[in-house]
Structures are given as structure tokens and as C-alpha cells.
Image: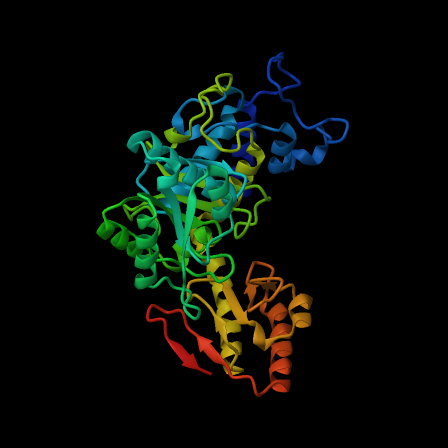
Length: 431
């Protein structure tokens, strides 16, 4: 692993404007065969003076199309400058954050975690079908009950089944017996190839799956499988709060990872990141895209190069050490909230490495939840409400919520409570 280093504002500007100078300039060059242009100059001012100090906005207006996958060598040469920044971003994520070997990964900036998860499942489905002559009915997605809804979308789109493993209500963990039963049932119904999606922090609970448990059970069953890590929420947190985790590329069973920069990294929406080991993205190649230089290996096709530049700029502004400090601050705020809930005997779930605290619905009224924008697990009949300690969620903003919870519980003192601790032992202590 290397350490990505922070750059000064002037260095970032120099790199981005230097990259743009290598891209096509639609207005100064006589290039007339590309079905693209900058943003409409009647609406977006291309020559505004402030753009000299605004590399992201300039990139947005210049409108680079990052169609294809640029880690494979050949891509649309019209946008080679900003493509180089995207390749650097992919290397930071795969190598510096997820501990992959240098040069050992392909990837691209997707539209979000949903696309990145679907891209992985699409690749593995095609691999099983092409290399092992599997029928679609013999392939299935396998995930926990806390799965992101993108698994359901992928199952529907790709025409393969989905197996869901129950989790314990208090620890949000998959239990071995439940996994063995699910796998055995699916295998008996004809499933021979499993695409496992292991959670690296779920969006509702911040819960984390154990990929070794999946591997042990599936190896014992003697079936083929590939494991994809869904780090769409936790990918920019968990590797820093739990550096010895089993969900990065040090684990030989982890073949791909999805990240989302438009959550914790605070990039513009539409900035998921897909990462996969070398030699695998070929199973998503669309050769019919022959007019695209380098062809297309992505689900989305045309995509904004500005989004890739935005994520690159954010990560380079911090560097590894400043990013760790930022995450540490969020964790301390989360620790503060947990201590307040403990002192008031409020039931909650909190993964010790996550900045999400999910509170039992019995401890607050729907009106309080709505007033603080708390998200329920189910809008029709909520059992949980989550607090996500993002950059803007200061202790000063958490204090009124704690006061409202305390007031509600004081007026409903007969409600029994329990504190849920998601440590490695899965302890449940009575409040």
C-alpha cells in the first residue's frame, strides 16, 4: 500500500487545467465528427472570469465524456487528459484505500452504488455462463436480509434468482446455521453458482458482513462462487475505522468492490466507483460499441468526466492523513450520541466502526423522527429510525434530538429498553 498525498489548491488547479488542456477543445479545434460539445454557451458562460479559479466548474462546462473503462489502456483520445485523473482516482481507491496490489485493478466512476453493484453481478453472471456453461436459473445472488435494494434490481434486470439470509435482530449478523440452510435450499432447487454480495456497512444499520463465513459455507458445499463487497456506504469509512477488516483486496475471496463518493466524500450525485481485479471486466465488454475507441465495458456508457474530476479533487485536497482525521471527528460525534443514549437507557444498534446509530422506534414519536429528518427502515410501519453523523451533523445538532428522545421516554417510562452492542461478541446488555 502507498499513501496518497494531499495537494495544495494551486497544485490541484494546475493538474486539472493541465488535464483539460489535453482534452479536445470543441470551440478552438476543427473537430466535427464527435457527437458532443461543451455545455450550451447560451446558458452556461464559458468565459466567465471566475472560472480561472474554478477547476471543477470549468471541467463541467468543458463537458468531457468518460465513456468506456480507462484502466484498460485504450480509450477515447478526445478526453485523454481527464481520463488520466480518473485512472489515478481508481488507483487511490483500489490500492491506497482497499490495499490492492499496484496496477492489479480495473474500474471506473459509475453513476452510483446501484450501478456498481449491478456491474459486478453482471460480470459474474456472464463469467459463469461463458466459462462454465451455466444456465441463468443455475446462478443466484446471495446476500443478507439487510441488502441494498440494488440487489433486487440486479436480480430482475439480469434474470437470476436472489437468496436472502436472515440476520439476528439485535446484532444484524448472519448466523452460520441460517446461511447453511439458505445455501442448501437454493442448491437443492438447482442453483450451482453463487454471486455473494457482502455488506461493508449497510445504509440502514451500518452493519458489516463476514465474508469468511460465506466462503467457508460455500467451499464446504463445493459450489462455485464469487464475492463482491458492497461498500457503497462504508467504503470511505470502514477501511479507516477498521484497518484490519476482511472486506478489502487483501482477502483473495473479494473480487470486486462498489464505493459511493456522493455519500461520505460529499461529491456531486452520480459518483459511484466500481473496482474489480484485473482480467474480469472483460466479461462486460460490449463489442458492438465499435465506434467507441477502446469499446465499452461499463453498464452506463457515456458518463460525466467532471464527476470523476470532482472526486479526485476532494481526495487530493485531503490526502490520507487529513481524511483519517475527518473520519475520526465523525466517529467522536457518533460516540457522543451513543453515550447519551446509553445514559437514557435507549435501545439502538451501532456498529462500533460506523457513524450510523439506528434507534428502536419505540423510543421516539413519528413526529420527532420527521422533525429531525430521521429515516425509518420502513415508511409504512417503522421499527427503527437511523441517525447518520455526516459532516454537517454536529453535536450541537444532535443535542436537541437527545432532549426530545429523553422527553418522550420520560413520558413513556413503562417501555422496557435494551442497549444493543455490535462488538465482535454481539453482546446485548440490559438498559
